[in-house]
Length: 465
Image 1 (cartoon, rainbow, N blue to C red):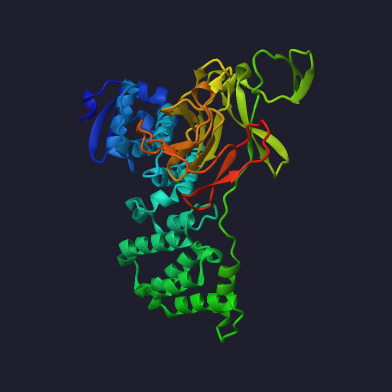
Image 2: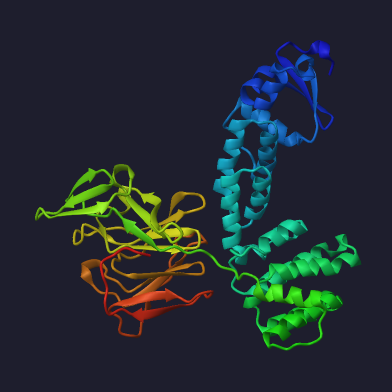
């Protein structure tokens, strides 16, 4: 395309040897990069043809379409490349559109890739959300092919993170070896030993049993590397205080592995506040809120700032020794709601059941889920039965409802459950409990999809979860 056919307001961008005619005005108004290029003291400001290196052609065409039509639909498979180009060329508004869209699309199948790209682009809120999901949902992600696409360094950064949640530490090792079998052809024989040692540093040896370490040593590729086998054997011997003749380097490495920080995941006690009935008079003072009941009794509490007297969930931060607001719950969801449950599990907070204005027959059958990563509420389903003052537990992908009071104040001796990840409206059938149960608590066994019920002899009317 010749320069003679170009008007003063037009520019030819050459990307991957393809020429694209654009409006210079549109580029200047929407991109700080092009604004500096065409209005600054650069040689490109006097040219009608500009070559751009390292830019994805398809992504650039999508960006140009978005300049003309903000409702243009970006396909999911293209959005990361559009984000990268918009960051490189400083299309700020389009970059924010991509970040918002990726936050909505965050799922276990794509969160690893989003994390890696967003961290490279220094998009902190996005990469922290993607990273959190990647660490929480490892037990799902480990079976996806996206693990094999990771370079070695990001792989070790991910699987070696102390906040990685896994049911069994051997799952981490098996994931590492799965990656190895897919990528081993890229590495020379002399690199094998160093790579397997990096794999060892990803593992929490304190959570590996003796039989696990012995199984690791039986893997053919591991067994063929004598230094790696000696390190694993030395780890076992140090546990039993055996002092065999190992090289100092091997002994030091084994001691490091045995003494490395174990995996952990921070958990915070959360409390629902600002839930006093509307009939109580409320007066806000500086830093406090005073409630007055029908007997004119006044009670002062520390004030958690919320909009329109919404309820709030706060958590206690041991590091700062303070209560911190986590999120607000709008008035419509739980104001004057009695006997409901709030349950936290992984990145979700579930709010379900209960009766508005006790005894009025106005039941809440909605099951709401707040996604901490996406920072949004979603109605997952509707309860098949009216229920309040019940027990609730989340195990694996299932929400269990146990006992409680139903319509006409009938005490229920049954349980039912729902798979919240499938996203269907179907609940299980009612299962009658064969044992006497009046007051009970449910408790999930750690690292298991099992829950147990505990007798509850004393209970207070609070809303912690």
